[in-house]
Length: 514
Image (cartoon, rainbow, N blue to C red; front, side, top):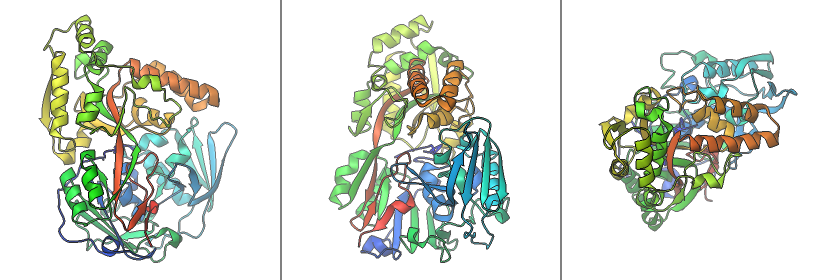
């Protein structure tokens, strides 16, 4: 279950710094029923924490680490509804370019520093100027300032339709200002959240242990006394941990094991969150000239049998699509799911029209343990069948995402979040400064439609969103195959609600069964 967005993501997803298979049973509620606020929640993760420095932190698959120690300005219910948290109320001006928020006055960081509007403002500006894959979420933030200790004012260069949701994710996380720039900022978090990292019990890259913050201002959110997050780098390691009852919950990266998971007494919690396929980054042909021709990108889309890919790789759990837009998004159009059908003859004709003979195009793509060898073999086969060669470069899991975001490869196999809103899709994937547009490709049609989505009426914005979807599909910016079922397994002692738009359930969505 990879999601590299909010895991940009990253989704980030499915990549770890170390492979482990922990022996023995996890403590606390994994071996028996615990009362709320007691016991231990032990969960599996598929990516190690890359940093606890909020300004640089990714989301999605790393969200559990961050939510354990940091509060956010707002909260999201499992269905995505925005709720008060550190910010108790908020309002926009008429142009939706000034957001004023009232903040709590009873919150302190674990180093004793008091949380106030000046701290919130500084955190927001640091995130905007940091290196997080989601920094584009605050691209329109021109200023953040404290009107008074409990009043925060955000000024935008243009409306941000998803800003409130973003403030419930990593852009809204609050870190103690005394820890900004500290030598250990990346590894020793100082927040105001429900838990505190236990550095003595933590093994960086493989096991993270958190203990209850006894001074936490919202104790009802502390469903457990202790959290343990074990990192597993392969589907087999996750399966073994489940069968060995070493964990209470974990994401599944391989739906073929669902029957085994159920047989082990675990509940399967499913949702469609991502799209899976090829990301065609180099749409201007800077590194791979052929990708600068839309006919080549369209040929790549016609080269794949999506139903067969879903069956072979996704084990039938999901829905085929030619679009990166989520069914929850205003831009979703079911017609775009079937825009490209399996048609190798048409793919060959398009390549011929673009001036390429069979074998003249070679795409160099990274290969890592994030995805199965079968997936890489099928991509090579399908593209080879229409005359496109694929050469794989082995990349260590720890460097896979960094290489992608640094524009080292013109295309790649990848699974990314199908964002729940069109504006998030723009901010994550499509605009020139989007994290998953590493070649910073600009498109005048995308820019014009983005303006309407950003500032137009609801009706105009929805129409523009659907036009945007159609444009991206027609221009073949991506070659999606299907939207996989994202599966999160929990044991008989644990309840959980999946989180709309995120690879992992949020921590407060877990609770022991009494």
